[in-house]
Image 1 (cartoon, rainbow, N blue to C red):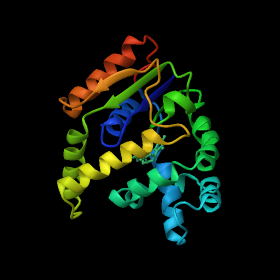
Image 2 (tube, protein in one colour):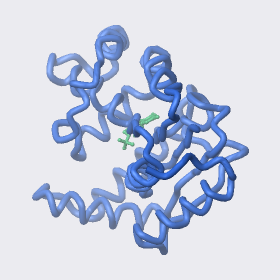
Image 3 (cartoon, rainbow, N blue to C red):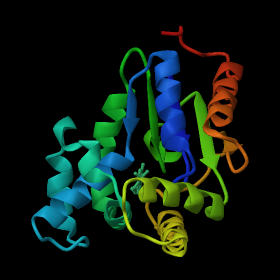
Length: 212
Ligand code: DC
């Protein structure tokens, strides 16, 4: 039972995926962390973000210990991850890792940009989570300000628009709605309402796993 969640930055997909995983007792993989970890490795060793050879090496060397969220969060890392994620060889190097995670007997919840289209095209439940750029920027701004990052709302909105354009415009595995995905627009929903809507989609698919 694979639940594939895709969507743009700050759409709510990460929280929805985490909560669905807890609700159905499934393991969860935030695939954005893989690209963030590759970007982090490049920056740590002073490689340019466009250095495909070094990026592939970093991708091949990834293991769970590199996915420590606190080091990978933050505005700079999201932007850097979006740059390395546009390199086709980096994406190719991360496909098996993600598919192996999804193949567990009990199933899994994966969230990212290309889960329903490329990584798990046969997933029985696909949800594309979205919200307007302004609402996503408001959420991200509140989150960054809460962490003490000094940033303006306009900067965050610019970031979101630039990231949307790069993630949707790249040639390999762009952010796109799978034809069989259900759209979940969270613009006017709080997180509880968004989660409930996601549960309704999974339950309606009629293949929900036994609850934990
Ligand atoms: O979900 P996130 O903001 O942590 O993702 C960071 C970047 O990684 C995002 O801008 C694009 C890239 N990404 C991707 O290309 N494919 C995925 N499956 C997940 C993330």
